Length: 280
Image (cartoon, one colour):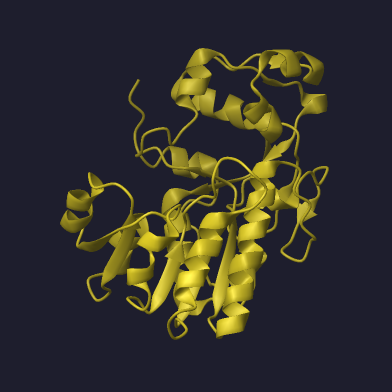
């Protein structure tokens, strides 16, 4: 919805939704709702050929090693003439653990979780479709998305719970992008992205995870989280959270800045978190 709000009135948007409850919301935003389900390929066929550009931000299923949703969508898209352009929102998780090294788009993927492997599969499916049909598609690899003006858009709840972070010697780098800057990147890629090109969409923050949470805690006037050793964290924290603490990388965003010519409104998380006043 952020990309839609930033696009202006000259673009006619259509949005696929599987929820009848969202239809009214979409219409109020000036969007034509398309009721269908990516998990039911038969519900998608009637939408083939309706649009000229595609912004695909739907996540894969929560299980398995592939993304059948992306496969179902591309099968439908092949039924009509090529699109003018497409954008797919992937994840920087496809790079896996890089031991804190800087990561450019030329680095080979090394997914270390089923979640990341599903994204690798989706990227391959969509890029193959793009090449086969002559549709220019840009793949955006996205880190943690945040925004203080949306529910769950900051780590406030986690800080209030006192969830521990890793001690400095075990800590990992964390990467972020403000939701508004991500929306702008999506729009730039849709109109100016190079064919079959990959873009890291990340801000300029260079913080390890513990330092990030310390900064946010100080900003919000909350206690800093306790620091624990990795073996202790493995006993206390859920598997999903541990997976984010097991991979360290610093995302290079120069291609995004030079090719998409995106100037970040929120160049780091400190700037983004204070963009909306915090309410205790």
